[in-house]
Length: 552
Ligand SMILES: [Zn+2]
Image (cartoon, rainbow, N blue to C red; front, side):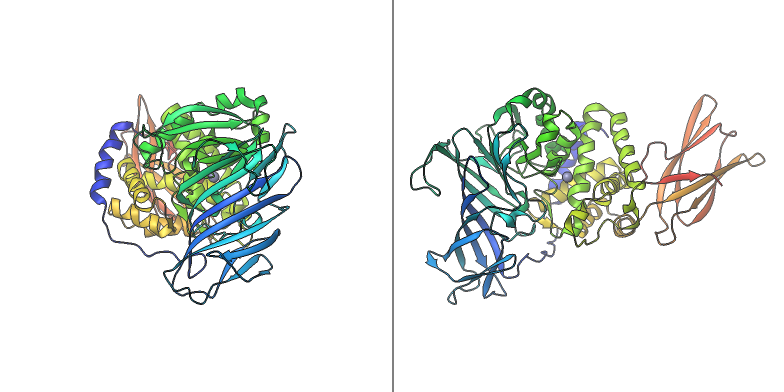
């Protein structure tokens, strides 16, 4: 990969490409309903597992007009529901809160649905002491656990703005998506849950996000700014200087490790903003939290495992991965869960690309090699990347992460750096803030490169496996040729892979390279060389996801 000059050149190409034909819109999560915004008020206590909530959901009715609004909500008590200020009938139906839509409401009308609710959430909103024994409250939604604390259309394809008003113990600080609105102030007596020794915090994401990204975190934090980033490339920022603030929110005992862990976070934001496109959100907070994951990429408020930070085991690679997600996953979001690689594969690859830029090619190749080994030694190789799972947690597999990252690396190998990164910018520029499927990404990369990539996406994304290669060579002294025989020995149910690989020949005093196009289960190619090589290295720079299983 080359430095900054290439990026300036590709920006002009991207600008010239805007205005290509429109794409089909993926189906909404609930036909006939489009949520525009959630206005959430939460009342949190210092101890106990109880909370109170009030949400105003602004939505627009679409065709076909539904007769009821089916919101996802599991557990909790619902006190009342109002539509445009009028008490409205509702019923609970397992995990659904069904609300009658007034007969007078027509397609195109906007409604405000207000719900007063609360209780002890069994998931999603985690109310417990943190790793240091201090009370805390954290939301952890992925993939569809927002429904345990927020009545919502809990599907990534219905993005909405979100505004939080959180009444919390005065010792706590509260972080959430978007930007802080005003300063925290003493909670008013007429607030949800009443006054007491509490402060009220307000946050707002004017950029629509998926419900799995909508979070608050509250505890006794030390809050530190690490600097600004994406200056002039952060359209949603509210700062006068056009930058975003990059900060961390951690527990007092863990500030030393956090300072080290997040030191390069602004550099990562700048790197991705240069490489991919403008930073999509209003700020970037890195938060020590109760998330069940190592890191969770919540838009503009990344949550990290509190244990891993307290123990000092959190890797910087997690930080770059989660920051890369702000573009891929959070801004450009898979419309269906089965296309999760568009989030995880991209975060895996772009997270590694930061280290290629910052720490050099060797560091990057080590990461890719580790990723390759993890994938080929897993049980996931028998399934394609795009695959529906009954249990969404099963999507957190080596196909969506490691193989997905490798697909991007191989595509970069096929297209070359210039077309690949131009295609990435075109794809992001076209779909920022939107939801997409794999075909949308394919179309962007085909549009920029002028290549038909159907074969590439079919064999690597929609089919299982990877090539397992048996390679042997023989020096043909008479013709001064090296015969290279390549046999694809992977399972018969896997595709016969097609790819181009470099081969390096070690000659006295120098090495020479040739490209070989591999296709077919078995093939032999002859390469003219001045003399017999002392060694032959297949794919010396590691561009192909493969396993070499020996010679034959
Ligand atoms: Zn991820």
